[in-house]
Image (tube, rainbow over all chains, first blue to last red):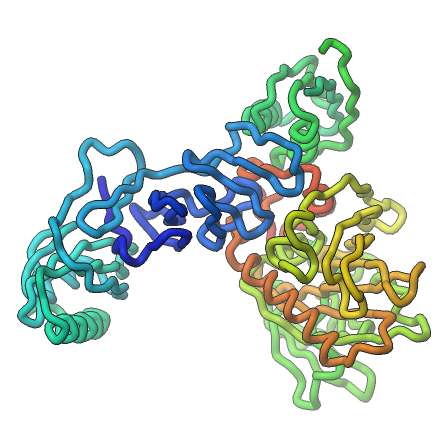
Length: 204
Length: 80
Length: 281
């Protein structure tokens, strides 16, 4: 089951950030070569969040003691013991990450199908709303669940919906061709939507 | 590579102790086996890189909450 | 309700130089307390029911024991040594277990990564063997022969040196570090963290120092220690689980973590569980 967690454009190489998918806290990161990865946000050494770490080349390192992990989540190096070749049993729990249509998707384990692909659209922005997904989508008048479609501020939108908690979600918004003025108007409409959803407004 | 024998002494009778030790050895990728074990003493033999055998001592000296490890005596094994 | 083992310890509750006549309302072990001056030089700490706790005024701070003190407040002889500068750094509130704050202070392997180019730098990341013991006669944890290469170890250091350290835990929420002192070879600079447990996952940390350094302005000494501690705070507030595990089943401690492991063993043996996680999670 795929969860959208970010716009591809917002995670350039060498960036790591925390995301929540399927109730799990993950460290989402992109290597120097552009490979996207989503790992449990917890270093197996002493529990530091890997989302606070740093990316060097194709490895993600923990900020606390510098333990460094390669593409499959296996520990490559323990700086306090530089001569030790870490056993492959020391590893971070790895989730599946994939990109489609300008969105980054995450699944907990081998999914049966590739993630939904919204097609060739333009990324606009992501926003987090302190309200549940159903309330937000019905207030916005958008149809669909994971990929919701419709019009906002007169612009055709595709919104990838990421549930985070019972009263929190993130929206990753893409559009078809739209000029600068339309994108600005859409962005303002999204802010207004967020304010209304957070104020507890219900759809008519 | 090194091979060592650990003699673990303490209050080790809790049912959780031996499975905990085996699991910790697995996390470190160490091969070995548990020898004699009783309420106050557990023997184990382990092979692997010295830094990982040191790491095993660190973990086992705490172990699960129900066990109290008073001491761990280590000695090299000459079998390798 | 917290157990006897937890209540019979000494805890810092205020910085004497910053405690005004209006006093201070705070929390200790989850309960409200009030700290003020009963008379000049005599601090008073009261529980919510008005009962007065045993108190001490020492190392620039006010200490309280919510139960019956199991022993006298620990001694730091260097505090009375002529020529020392005593530095009150001021309080930092941290959303973490008080035990996590102590454990982090005992760790050196993080210096090149958390305090980059201040207390350590790559590639000098190796942590050599050192000694740790629980000194039974005083019931304290001590780590000795700890050494680490540092580019700029103290405000008084001119360049990179291999610094020698000792660590001492004289009480469950107090950690003391002794560091080689460039202007006075043979003496140790003393840097402490006095940790006030407000809740199991919230504490106030009071760093304090007794240094041989006649040159560095006081504000720079304070700023240096605050900078270091604020770097540690971002680690402390982002470690899982929030409480300090006494069972390392979800962790992989190595020999470099020996002081942390000894501290946890010492807490476990004493039955000190405030801020601790008993089952690995």
